[in-house]
Image (tube, rainbow over all chains, first blue to last red; front, side):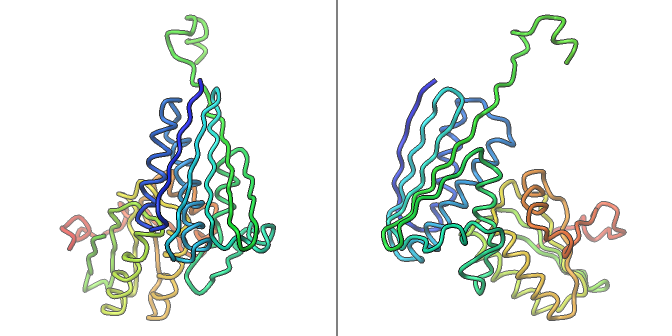
Length: 154
Length: 116
């Protein structure tokens, strides 16, 4: 199966819910489990929050989301033209946050990394950041496709 | 978010009813701090029963309220975590600091009554 979509919205934090729900709806054609959908929604929410809070630092900007489905893999790109990340390796450290005074947990990249199969962060300081994430949606064997023997084995 | 204060036991319970993200957290933080300061409870309990989505902003918010409750001499607990929410809590390591309790086994009949 192949499918593709693009979204553009301004960097307001009330668009976080819109972004993750739109991506979840797009992925739903692959019949993901509740856990897979929830993992994807959380990863998208983290990336979009990063763009709003760190990329644009609550100033107005545009966030782009590109999603592609290739076979059973969902490919998500989330990009901004914000200030970029000075040190990507440092930013990816668990619990690291550049804004500790604002009650940030520093878990964003750790969640994206562990909830998705692949994570790539491309950032140019002063130019912007692009997050690329992929996840394979596992196929659940349908009951009618199983032989009686397989069905009994569970 | 709804809340309830049990005067005799000095327990303040928040029942979060929305998805928790960066946007919602601002309002939750403000409401919770207001009530914690007002009542200075011995125990603060956050009930996640109706929370179907939470990202890492929820962890920051909970740690912040833990600090706030501690400042007024109270301890903090959380309850009714759904699988997706528990996954984030477990990953954060916050459960070592803020224990998850089974609210059904608390001898608090007032908990069943209406929230504000």
